Image 1 (tube, rainbow, N blue to C red):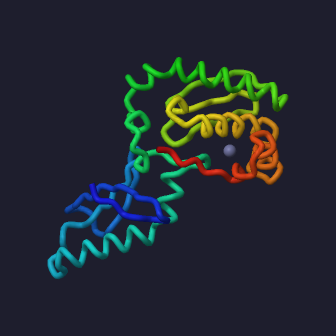
Image 2 (cartoon, rainbow, N blue to C red):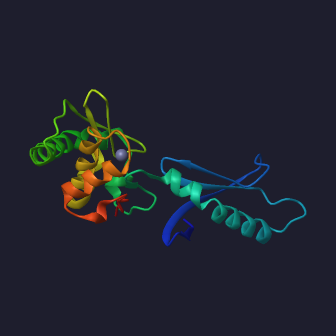
Length: 194
Ligand SMILES: [Zn+2]
């Protein structure tokens, strides 16, 4: 698959030629970036349209990063980890309970340090998020937390627990995250997953 460097990250994308597309477009499906190119126009050469398509892709880099990366970090197609790229239900069912154990243990651990209580932990197969929380103090985690590094696992847990105090990404929220993890590097931290 073709690759391009955007913001010094290697991004893999799929090229699709379409007879119906009237202009160059990009879309994201299952975390995969797709560059849609109209079948070469009658008057322009193939090289020409290929270059235009790449220029278009580069011009949309902010959009691409916004959509490929959520608040907490990045998923595929930046990841080479096959478990992070496996989006099947079988995979989810296989690892769901193991992920629950990890989340429960870590939440308990951080709860003692932060003194923030929560209700229920749910493990889900989320397409674009690592975690979320509700006003009822329920926490949801993506089962793929299992495949993250210890550092990222702890960050994710602390991030969501901190939302039970600050339901936003205000400076107070980041103060709490950094104070809990004991490091300023976690301010507006973007997890890099691989
Ligand atoms: Zn958040």
